[in-house]
Image 1 (tube, helix red, strand yellow):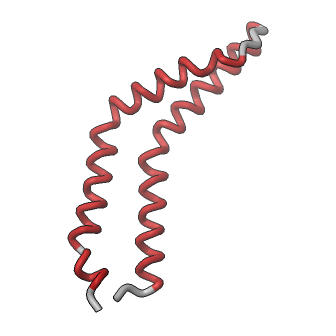
Image 2 (image 1 turned 120 degrees about the vertical axis):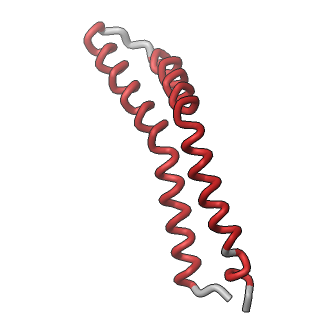
Length: 91
């Protein structure tokens, strides 16, 4: 039977994994948003929808480039969880 510490450890690993695999897309979106905001400020263009298309394209390209790494990371974590499954339910 699992202890509270083991459950907390798995939950912590899961949260860290979520942060690790989502960070590239979030950073790309943040950087593109910042660059578009600077461009809007310099050119006095105040169109609110101007940031959406570059962000979507940037996130899409990031997913294409880093998709295999994200998938491998998720598969490794799930393999680790499933290989230890008997330890979690025994008791």
